[in-house]
Length: 111
Image (cartoon, rainbow, N blue to C red; front, side, top):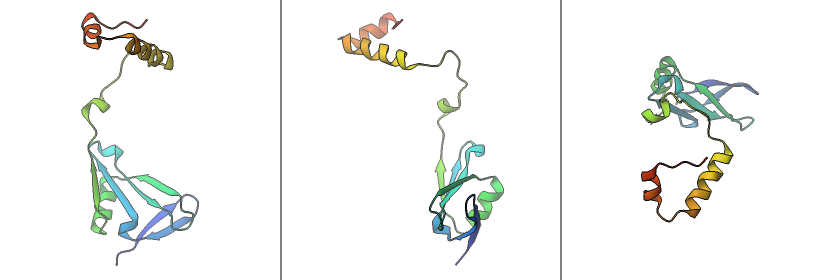
């Protein structure tokens, strides 16, 4: 059986089996990671996984989870951040509105 050596920030070097390692390969490569529960302290350890690390873990028998980030999540955001007051105002508008489609057609203005 393959033994994978990894490092826990609290316990130092630990030995794992392929089944103890979770490998997540993301469509945005810089977000790929591997994770494991330290066999000594039981903390979850999560580390970035470069293409070399992915290849090494796969060759050691670790199964791959694919993670596709929707394009919308990677879009650049502009404008002010939504505050809790904005969410509450929106909820009050929704609560007082019987015709949501009609309100959307007129352009919703909460302020």
